[in-house]
Length: 401
Image (cartoon, rainbow, N blue to C red):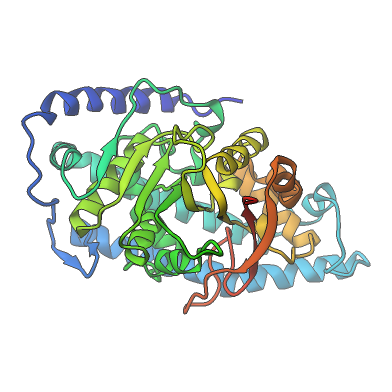
């Protein structure tokens, strides 16, 4: 099933922007990014006070929806299950969970409020960056050839169908809006409830990357790098390593490069597919994929795992931080199945249901990985969002020597 038709319009806008930007590239010189209201540490402030205050409100609201209101919805679900003679911790089919919960006003109000808040956040961010498009497009043009680090865009690259959804309801998805990177960065700050405004969580992820047993780290790869925060964290941890971030979304890697250059961190970004990275065999010592696998099809996931094995050097390690990669998998209770369903149904996580049912350790072994384990990030703020959790043990793929 294809994505919303408006993607075609947004994609055309992005393509036209790329042609305009390419024509200016030879004449542009990066002189620093646009900072209409300065910055706080590593984070540039949003362009207007009204937008910043509105996003602060939406972030606070998300915090309430994720805690107090979520606990109320959980208690209500448990009550419904008990009244039906079920133990809330028992495994129940998704169909039964849906039929029992979808008409309850407390549960549906929590769900609807979460989605409405998400949609309003994206609308505000998209309006802000499109409303000053010339300024922000010119900024990216100026940064394209700036250093440190490099940027590779491939406007003729085939964009697979499975990537063309508006994941998380982000307008245009990761490939169909020229400001996808801008929106994603500030949108995920909302998602992390301001605990990642200084990239602290991505720094924790980079710190959790397992090192090959021989201790040699010369090359690192961030698969599905989005706006580059983990790749930057890897370079800061391994300053002498050659670090790359790849993503299917040209606007994502373009923003990632611009931000890394502004931070003065030497990372290389490329618009490439995670399943077809174009790197040589046996090239990388460490690979990280953070919350990538629940956003790709199962066929693509298998191809990505094979590609990771190919480009890792013998003894290299591949850490995938995603819920399905926990060593100790949580029980699929009736309420967790309900949440999986509404994430697919209303947050455009179209690959999420098959992802939760897939045996990833088996898939790793099938292509030739040895499957080990490692401790994940130790977040000072406690649990992360839906993709992964703090203090858990994760599987890691090791390429046999």
